[in-house]
Image (cartoon, rainbow, N blue to C red; front, side, top):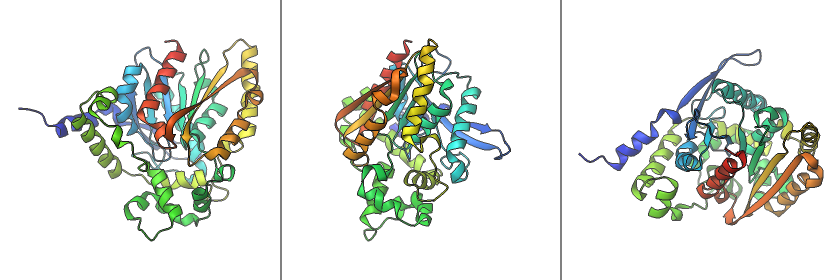
Length: 359
């Protein structure tokens, strides 16, 4: 009896590697916290570089399903963590969000017996990646320290983006329901909220036209019909899970809740870069390798805009980074803030990590 595309996809989506559970032990500041996460690419037991992927505002472990094939073909292992309030991960207070995610990452790496990773931060995930880089550089491979920042989140006061300026002035209480906006948004609601919902949910400027038979075989290892079913079913399962974490993600990124939305080490970017400069210059003097920082930017970015790009370039200039850090910036053609993080560019990042690792 022939197996239907639906049954084949169900078998793929149910693989245990996409639905791992870890418990962060209780401390003086919190009780035990459940964390759900996923693994993609080659097995962690193989001699391959490992990437910790800090996804965007609505990204979670389900991204592993899309990335699994290209990660394996690129020869890397990738870890995706459901941040608090997503999937099965226990929610935490907003003012503890960044510190708790940092604690989760360190504990999970110990649990998985992983000593070193390359960091990748996408959009809102760059806030978490930069905190890890600043506070715990020891998790990077000292022989080949590497971090990639894909369209980093830049606060609206540095970009001048009107939709985010408008959204940042909305009542903080409204952001308790970001997870419901997509389902209940109406035509009467303001353009600022409408655009923000599309941006957060990553459904605007869809790249569905890319999904030809050839594209699906190259990026998913599946034919078009099974790839389409994988995408549709995966989205349904993802939407059925808890996603209230996006409420706090939006508050954090837009800083709508005063005194509760600090970005930790990423709060002051010039100070963060200065701190990194001092650390990595000393490491190079001690005979260690330079830190490689790669920015992957969009050709047309409605979030960062030209003003935000100039701000990033000023903060991360080679002069300010010093002799211990090498900064490279790449712009991808015909991309916007959403599409720059598509599969073809994620594959490029995976391949760069593999090449740079020398393994």
